[in-house]
Image: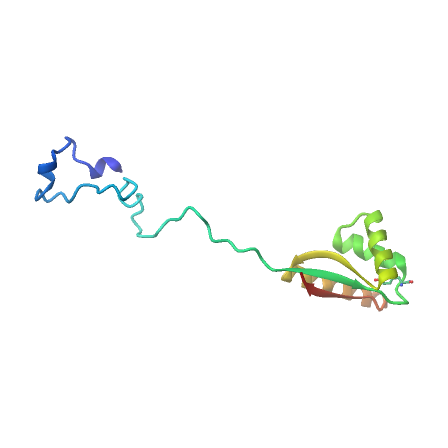
Length: 133
Ligand code: TYC
């Protein structure tokens, strides 16, 4: 569309002033007459993205939930392999609390709901909770 803006024959400096064609480019733009954006929207090269807040899903120890059940939960809802799930389960068993994963709030809440629903369905007292990173 650049061809629409400029006259076919290059004018002299004098022919711009008072010719009704408008002033010459002062060099401050990008030379494309508004970037070719006829909607009037500004365009930016840098996008304004913000990192979402992250939350840890914590598993709590208790005296009754079988170790195998906790390992199964970690595999099913936190996509751990059996070695990783066993490590995390033993950490929680020995220390009282451990991190299952770090997620955005909505995903962390969903994980907690899934774990608690599954534990309740199997009549285990397993608890887990969310903590801000
Ligand atoms: N302490 C439980 C037991 O001895 C095992 C267990 C581990 C329970 C981790 C909960 O989050 C937990 N059977």
